Amino acid sequence: MYLKSKDLLGLKDITAEEIQYILDTAKTMKMILESKNKKTPHLAGKSIVTLFYENSTRTRLSFELASKYMGASSANISVAASSVAKGESLIDTGKTIDAMGTDVIIIRHPMSGAPHLLAKHVNASVINAGDGMNEHPTQALLDMFTIMEKKGRIKGLKVAIIGDIYHSRVARSNIWGLTKLGADVSVSGPSTLLPPEIDKAGVRVYNTIQEGLLDADVIIGLRIQKERQQKGLFPTLREYSRFFGLDDKRLLLAKEDAIILHPGPVNRGIELSSSVIDGERSYINEQVTNGVAVRMALLYLLTRRSSNESIN
Ligand code: CP
Image (cartoon, rainbow, N blue to C red; front, side, top):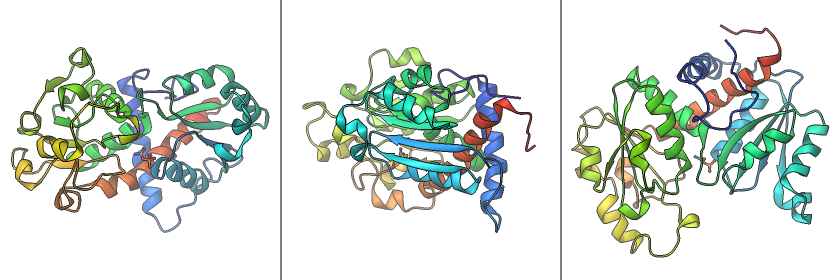
């Protein structure tokens, strides 16, 4: 099986079978990561460039490590120190990277749709590492991988996504991906942080955290994105935390074996209490580990489209 597109721009655009195929391939990559020698030759001769117009720790580092473990040549463009600072357009920057024979460009951009625009103008595969408020598909894939690993399935699970849904590209990608794989997804947040018509995406919508948490198998907390808030969407962070923060008491509403995920970085004490973050039901660190495996899988699957290699 091959991924249909040369790019991974969002989970809205790919099929349940393709998502499952990426998750299955990531399982093999995780075994490689857990072995003594993490090095594999799957990307030997390939070149990977990360182009981040927004800050990142997890996504950028995990792509860079994934590239290195698989033998690719990888480079990062520091946007502030590049010709972007002289006014070069995204398309011209992309064509310049493409002209150097790059196989994959991984882009994070504050504007929704920027990776889609880039993908139309370059021969390289483009991976969306987060575009504005639109999608963050590799985060959702690693979330789904972690759920599969801990719960053994996704179909039929009650997944509660809690917090700032409006600004969250992680929430959008998870809604696309989880519903395609048959999860029962709900979103909970203050009405000002819920996108209009979100119910049309096939999710239940709640205005209290308590309703979302009830009997949940999986809880995905979201970061309050201070950098994207317009004034007045909620009174204060303290007020937000009082009504939507997840603490040990509220956690009692979920199933006894419910797991807690968060894309990071976490605002400690605001969306999750420290005891929840560091508790035994939190898999936030495992998500980071799984991020490397999922990104290894994606880099492998996108670069092998032109050959007949298979690792399975
Ligand atoms: N989850 C996530 O995208 O984290 P970074 O911003 O650190 O990449």
